[in-house]
Length: 501
Image (cartoon, rainbow, N blue to C red; front, side, top):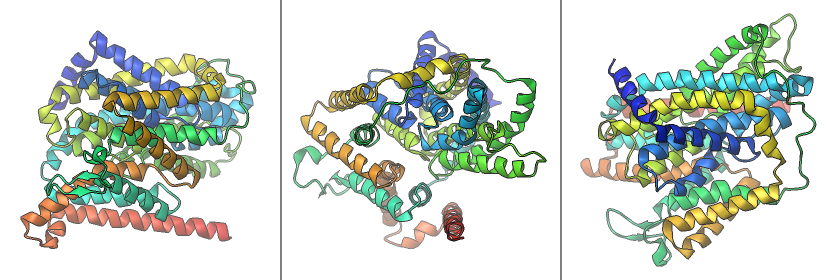
């Protein structure tokens, strides 16, 4: 009951004219960026991060939440129409979604995706409203050893799951931890890894790193691969943007199963929405094989409905994990954690006490964003698709300019522009060699927390490392970590066995 009262107060803040405007702006930006191939919500938030410092924290995070949800909505549009998903989380939707579009059912496919994302997002937002305060109360029991175990869990689970190669995932994690260690040691005052460069004494800004890796690195990657422009001329996008009763009956069970699959992955650091979307698709494919007339491979609506619901369900609960535990489970959540830190806020058990107006207004904005996105995507999906006609050289040149302007506006330092260029080239190299970016970002964001927690735990026990595994919470976290790693190893072994057959 207390949660509902707080949520009602949050709606009072979120429904003010100015905050309602920011919800719409965030949803528009997120959907527009998500529609463009190769871009996504993580890049949109990275680009907006240095440009929202003029806003008050509540307005800024309402924009970020709109971008976060809108990016997942928009990613599916290109996947369905052109078989070019905006992010990895939209790949599963393209398998049957694009086949529906090729069969002349593009409007129905876009409607299926929009409704599925709406259902997953609303259900997960309801879960977060009741779960996040309980998680915050529970996390009040966390001490340095528990926070270190939580950070270690995020490090190992993310780096081992989000990439086909565990070595590449760990390499990205080490890079992130190394970047986080640059500067003056906050405890001893010792200079670390700065090579005697005064500009590095304060460390490397997370804004610079995220913009460089996600945005500028993508610009370099696309520039190296551009061959010809693809126009939206081969898929018919006109027709009824709603579903018949038969289609609704077919899609409804898949929406429910996809939502149920996506919800728990929002609090497990396995790379965000990527894993549950594939699981949801695989579940529907296995169920389809049992039917008298299998439909997968011909444009099965269930093969699109389930991944869409799973993706947005994950996004909602991942925001709950971020707010209540300070745990980012995806690259976009890691950037939003950095945004909280830029405003002097630390997500976790104290955030609900120190900034309740911001937290509940943000949670209320999730529901508003879902409605706004449904309105934007059902009738206007064909219009969003026209953004694909923008020539890529002009599009990515503009993104590069905004990268430089955003970073320079936050620091007014030419050195940071050279740093932006160097890190952008690093992001390009990581993409070319299949090294995931999420472990690097999570390593940089959680690295200082892990280091400080480890030091405090060892200092409190006079150097006895046993304190790190002494509590019941740490024991559970390490057991779950072992289970996650075992599951990852088993899945890799099975995948290799299938290749050898």
